[in-house]
Amino acid sequence: MAVGARSGHDEPEDRPGKPENVEPAGTPADRAESDGDSPNDGGKARQKPRSFWKELPLLIGIALVLALLIKTFLVQAFSIPSDSMQNTLQRGDRVLVDKLTPWFGAEPKRGEVVVFHDPGGWLENTQTPNPNVVQKFLSFIGLMPSVEEKDLIKRVIAVGGDTVECKKDGPVVVNGKALDDKSFIFPGNTACNDAPFGPIKIPEGRIWVMGDHRQNSWDSRYHQELPGGGTVSNDEVVGRAIVVAWPINRWSTLPVPKTFDQPGINAAVGMVPGALGAAGALPLVLWRRRRLTSKRTAG
Figure 1 (cartoon, rainbow, N blue to C red):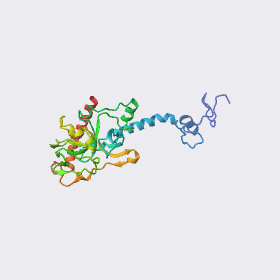
Figure 2: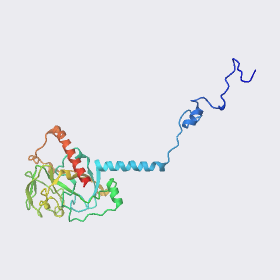
Figure 3: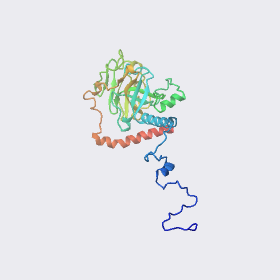
Figure 4: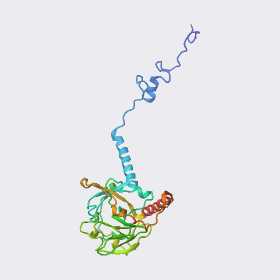
């Protein structure tokens, strides 16, 4: 038979240069070359584990983002710098502040312990900390208590629409109801003998605050000459302090004292009825808070 001739039963000759041991496409050998399969592994991909050191920066980045989100929208730690809230809070205590509730339009309530930005002029004569770069960064992402220079912590005594007063040797009176403050003010303190005041009508959208250590607290009583008459705008409130988290032996919640729940204390305050009113007010409150945040960022 001449070279190149074919019989009817001959197999086609291989094309020039084609290796004789190459298997048809789709066989284990082809997959082993293309996607890492082994001919004997049943078709399952075998991936090399990523190095821990390569994953570490990604894990740290995710943790930092989560910490920042929690600090911005949920809970933030604050350190108590003074004795103005004794004995409820001691100097050096770490408290956790609920920042989520205000985003949903909830206004501060009487008896709550709140953190708020300096309304202007309250801390001008107070020495402020000088944190280093690391402390500022850790505080910014929420991994250590806030070192913000312009934050204060006090107890809400009256809210917008309330009338509050305190005469010498008398109790603090809100809407005609005397407060029994013995359960939370510093032992031996009087309600306001060092600075009697009122009666004062609290403007809507503002609060009147006082420290639990009445004789050692520069609170609303001492700033009546400033704009706002000693009151604080609700927009300046960072959130409510809900728990003492550190040191461990002082762990405790910060509930509202029962005297603020006495019958009739809400009589003089105009309330928006029901969930419909709250839903209607929510867009306005969120717009106000966004505008305030943008203003602080721009400044």
